[in-house]
Length: 256
Image 1 (tube, rainbow, N blue to C red):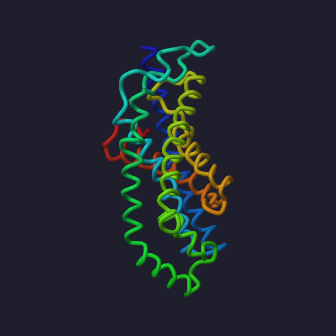
Image 2: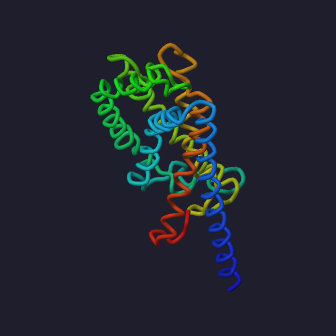
Image 3: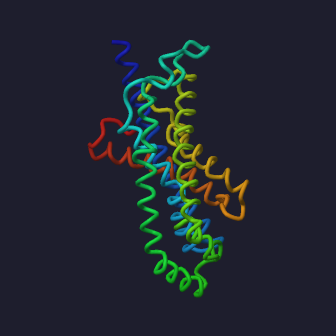
């Protein structure tokens, strides 16, 4: 009876946290929009949104794909860390690592191929908007070309390949790092590890994406501070708000 009561209290507490975080991140998105629009322009905020999503897309798809390809032998082989707890847990499996290769990376390439095909009309729209002074922060067409298609053809295909692979497996390593931390705090699989659960893969992907920017700055653009901040807002926001809404409409039993 006592254990049941404790579980109910924990669930109520996590429900409250989910609602508070959903409202908090919704407000952060609004504040980010206002700040960017005031300092620069609303068109720059839209560009910021698009650049951020295109940059992190491989990580989103790869992180989701591991759920479908997972199962089987755990990565840690059931071994314990020095604190007596599992290193990663049963849900982090060898098969899960195939998700980016079989699903995340190919799907992302298909998306970018579409943008490459449509680049000319997209380019004309951007140039027209730029000539009207709509862009202040992102007023260089080369920035748009880099995020939409990896840069000038044919070098862009190599840039995209490197960017997509780094984002995909950076997300994997970030997710594994989050799972490792979760075990250290003795949080069971399936229980929420707030913010870390939503940010670990995105942070890992962003850090990996930045690597070639330091080595080949003339070919790879480093994500600017505005993109980095936006990614750290939008990634947990999408997950937390979507789960909370799904819970409110009855599609999920818990809002996390």
